Image (cartoon, rainbow, N blue to C red; front, side):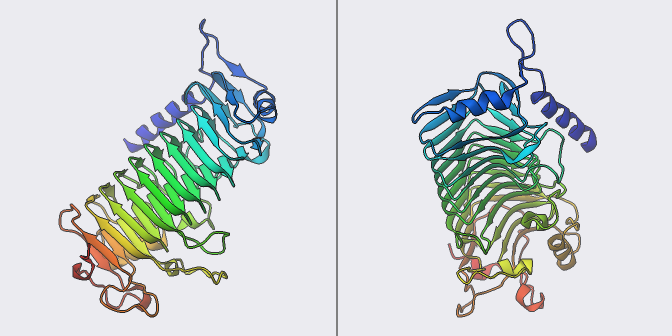
Length: 396
């Protein structure tokens, strides 16, 4: 039954991005020279201009870009009406690349980019609304890594967007400041929504479903911006993120086990509340330091620990099955808790100099769950003292 559902879904996605956009008399609207049409508009763009992309399927064979021209809006006629298809792309690392301030993207789809679908870099003022990114050939490691990909940006709003079949993260915001991701639908990616090395981010009113991991808040070393902090994740529906991990080996998200709702990795000052975290086969929420990856780093600025975390008033319902064991983290969960998915797991790794029963200030309270499965797994001591007591963490 699941296979039949997946085949039907792929057919629907393919039809949405194929030659089925009709004019008033029923003819397909296909722009064979899509690169020339759109790139010319971008090259000629003026400050403050709105570039209209009329409905139709634009066949594009190389990356298109907008560089250095501020306050430009790129507007289609709807996600299912204006489609930029990179299925025949032969050059370029992205589909659409933007390096300019005060940018607005509205109402179009980017499909089948060779690399990342839409990359915005070093932009101050980003608004992306009603935009879709997808890969129509299904879940493949050769798909582009990111769907929507603002990096090293400031004042980012991603609203009412859709992202599917990215081999890394559908909606990814990295090394950025003042970020809002809201009202979006991320599905069939490895990571649905990922906030990485960001300062002051809010993720709310989204649906993250049928990914490998629903929402990730990561902080990674050896990047230009490290030690992100202050992220709020609330009012989201994070459901059935049990998809097989199809990331290429070596990517950070390749470690994420199928069946993960929310994972915090070296995250600081995070509040997770009022979310529905439902039907995951490995864990609902994971609280981990970077040490759990067993990877080295060189950056002396980097703080690998997770601390100041508040998890409250969420609804958690786990899937009735055994944890996924295709990845090391899932194997660990199943080894410690045979056949039992967990609701909240904390690695228990603490920073030197922090003392007390809750030295990393991990606070967990008022979550709605039947017979909460929580554990501090004492990873620093080879799991010698796995502790299920929630008492030290009821500090909200």
